Image (cartoon, rainbow, N blue to C red; front, side, top):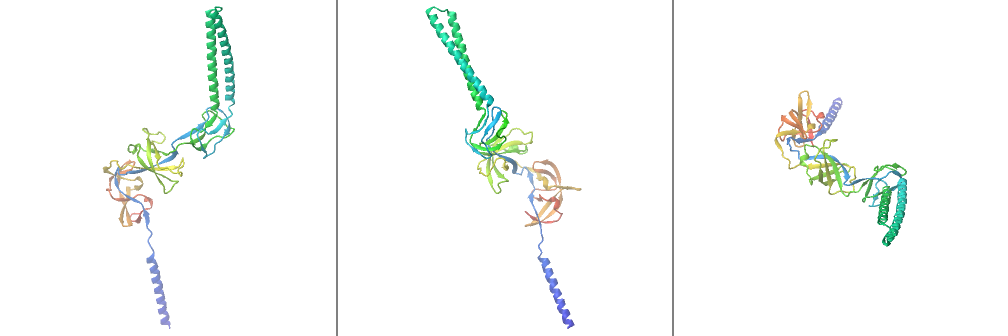
Length: 361
């Protein structure tokens, strides 16, 4: 009985150990995913993407041409307006007073002109009868001419003052949408002070800056691809419309404008955009290798990259020293240590280990 009990215990222990061993063998090894790219020549980077901002092709800052207090302000954010629609009006106290004074001056000038005309007609009749001298007749003609010129001047003054009153009104110059508002009713504004912004363009365009390293490859009517971070999964076609000949001092880039040729209602003014250029016709320097800056690490032994030796989806990364030269827009020029076509890791160098197995992405 004792021998039988020991036998059964030994068998149970063996089965338990076998099951545990089976579970250990079934455990899968977790591999770190790694992005990679092949080492290429300088100028071989054909596709470049730059960030920009969307805006309508025509933006109008709405403002009054005279000063005063706003008494009518019929504008709201996102409001659609029609051409010649009244949007805002000032109190126009000073303009109306000037207009009334101009009308008074006009009436006085008209009265003086009529008096001078009657006097001219009377002197002419006397001169024709020989009862008045030629000098009296010439003096009467000069008086009438002066009064007539004064009347014409006063009439122009009335027209000008009437136009000044219109400076206190804002009418929509084009059909469009109110994009922003910076004033309210009862606010005192100055001439030329923007009170709102009207987006009246029919096309949507992207404003961006392009560095000097690729600006010579950008030409008007060049086709590009446009994406928006706010519109995931959507891509739009674009065409270069303007290329600045001089650098922008603030951004140290060349301003470029791109019009979206197939826009949608989802694109709003101010959205962040990514514009992709394909410089497929650029010449490649087949003597200078280049690697991305973020693919190069540095330690006490110098600069290095992680070479990728792949076998299907699973690969091994190996730390490999290199000698780099000048820094270009595409990355570091490689003087020694690499050859074209070799694969290198381009992300997560800080977490990689020499000889580590990884999963390629």
